[in-house]
Image 1 (cartoon, rainbow, N blue to C red):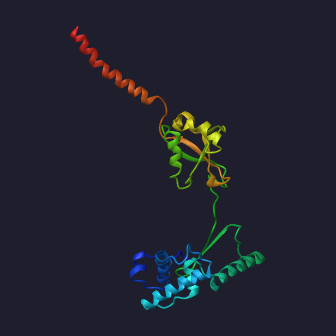
Image 2: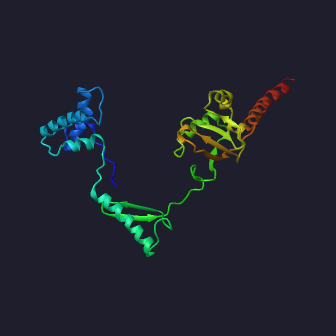
Image 3: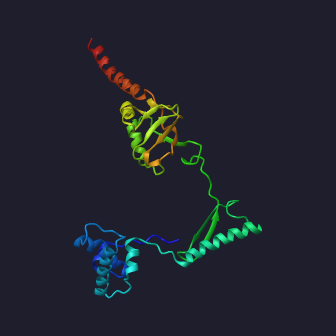
Length: 263
């Protein structure tokens, strides 16, 4: 219902405050750190809030700014979003509207076709209902594995590091199992980590096959298990070795020809 509070540059707070909130933030960020009236700021301690309020009020008077109050100081420091009457009225009206539709069948209610209602009142009034679709490859509620294209020449360690950069994963300490429940690398317990860490230097093409599924777990995911269906971006095999052999043969041919001429 409310947009997040806009950030204010520190230079504005320190030199040219224009609003009462700037004075409060100055007391909160700058004055507190420089004077340290208490060992640690406690947002729920009235004595601490009073100190910030007095500092902010003096700052506001210096720049002829009005509006600094104790309650506003609490709101800014604790980032409190006020529960204004219009917000409660909108929620109550939406509930009554849905109850009326169910009782009279005048229109389909939420949950029959559309299952989500959005209201925006930041700039004007805008309301919209739509249906949230279930993603078949959702790691939480889906039942299909998500496709993932990888280079089979990546080592398992490099693949694990790449998972941390994926926006849908952002994993910290992932453990990986293959489709046949074989542990490729486990972060815990320590005995399994030691038993599987030798796989970190192996290439993905040596550990799994093209089209196979893997399961990824992480402490940050709780019980959620990411399932990926791997697709190799290139053919995995002794291609590099053949190339090296071919180069070696090509290099040997001029030597052999020169030797024949000398004979």
